[in-house]
Image: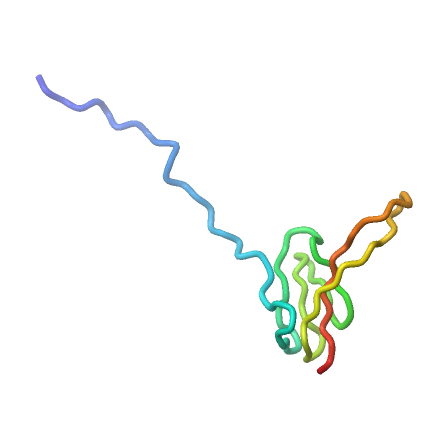
Amino acid sequence: MAHKKAGGSTALGRDSQSQRLGVKIFGGQTAKIGNILIRQRGTKWHPGKNVRKGSDDTIYAMINGVVKFTSKKVKGFDGSLHLRRFVHVLTK
């Protein structure tokens, strides 16, 4: 007597939507007021001149201008130095 066993459930077939994180406007490109420069989780990039950080750590422009990325050593609470990356929007 030919028959199939009852089909069981599978652990595969589920995947979450991507969050589309990362740099949206790169260095040297122009940004307008309110443009999102970087979407991130945590402060991988820190806000610099004419840039603010949103509640979800998104970095956005406060003025029209050109995007610039810099690195700087910053002293932490324990006195140790950490290399931090900053995002700026500078006027043309």
